[in-house]
Image (tube, rainbow, N blue to C red):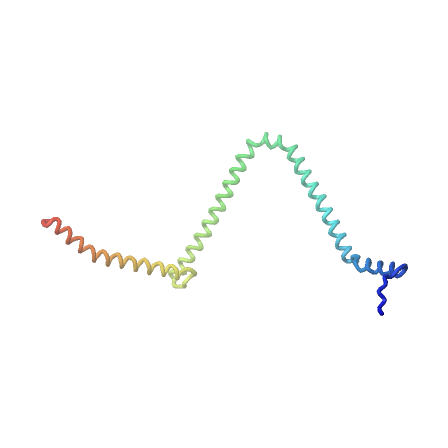
Length: 154
């Protein structure tokens, strides 16, 4: 017959202590949590200091910003317009160089990427134009005969 009694006294205390020790974090886990806590605390402190300094700077520098705005607002606009213009010209130059390079390779017969689509479009345009020409020949004569019927002396 099996002994199903619950331990009492010293045996119960050692069983409870063993279960407690099995669930306690080991030193690497404890060191990781401590490092995480310290790092998070430092970052929260630095966030608070940065936010406080920014708000104080805004409070104390607002009058200076307002009084000097007639000078720096036009300068900021001029700087923005100049920067936008230079970047636009650079982008246009880059796109133009890429387009000329593609056209050069296309006319030299090197078949750059996308040339198949251009050839397909060219053949479709040619086919459509020939169909329109044939249609005009066919119905152009019909219309001319109708005009002669309407005005026999013409």
